[in-house]
Image 1 (tube, rainbow, N blue to C red):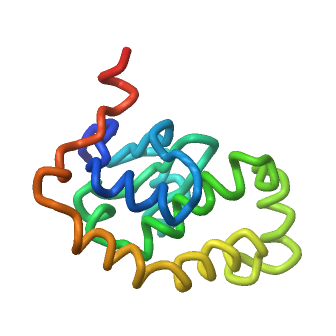
Image 2: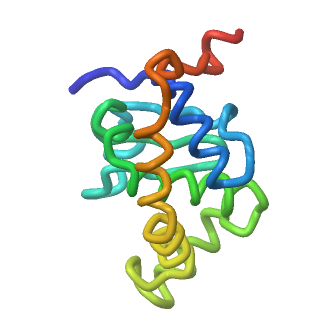
Length: 140
C-alpha cells in the first residue's frame, strides 16, 4: 500500500470550485492513498472538517468532476458551517441508511446540479492556470 500524502490542488480547479461553491477551498487538504479512507469500507473518499481523504490517487479524483463536487460539498457546505458532524452522520445512516441520509442526498444533488458547469469552467481554463495551488504543507 502506498503512503498517504497531501496532494496539491491545481489552481484552475480551485478557482472553478470556489466559483461554484461560493467560498474559498484553499484550506481544504486532499490526502491521497489514505488509510483513513480505507477504513470506510468500499468508499473511494471520505471527508472531515477541512479534509478530503482518498482511497486512491489525487489525479483520479481531480479527473472526476462529479466526485470532486460531491466531496467538496461535504467539506464546504456541511462540515464547515457545522451542520455535519460525525454523530449526526451516523444517526442519519442509522435512520435512513447511507444512500438516503440527508448529507449524501444533498451532496449528490449539488454535484448533479453543478457538474456540467464545472466541466465547462475547466475546459475554458487557460493552460497557464493549471499550475498547482500551493498546498497548506508548502505554506508552513
